[in-house]
Length: 213
Image 1: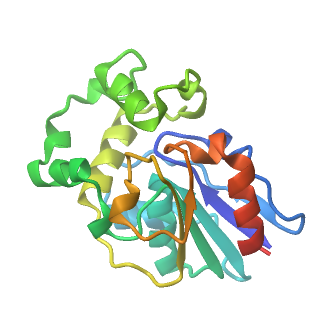
Image 2: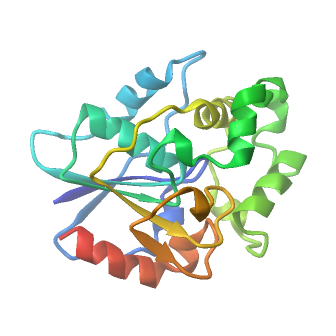
């Protein structure tokens, strides 16, 4: 069966490359599309779902912002099973920082030129919240289009969603992007940060093999 995957904000499939699955699972990675100017989130979700063949059963898995996307796609093209890694099931699970961004509309006032620049203050901030000890962070975050990054961060801040009962959530206990205290995950990865699909790939893979069968 096909498992369609979407990586985190700005990341390609490399961030999920250490995960392993049962041999009968066919992995199909959906790459990020660059949003059209002022594109509505619902229209973007529809475009991201176009590569999914829903004439047959399939699975969905998303990491971080990709977790938000696969839940939205699930409403358009229901999956047999859906897993989110390092992501949230509803807007009530957002961190205080993200909620503040929504309330103040702060992202609107950040110059677009600061997005996608590896030497910027923004990049250093992202490095700190994702995993400050990982010196190879830029290897995994390769989608650096400034408009895409600013647009995506704005959509995360403004996301409104009711929890779906069939979504399986896996979180790390030291994730400060989506803190575990705001959620009730199905599985907890101990001593791990937001980059746990990379740093705890073996443990995560063992869990995924029990889900995607």
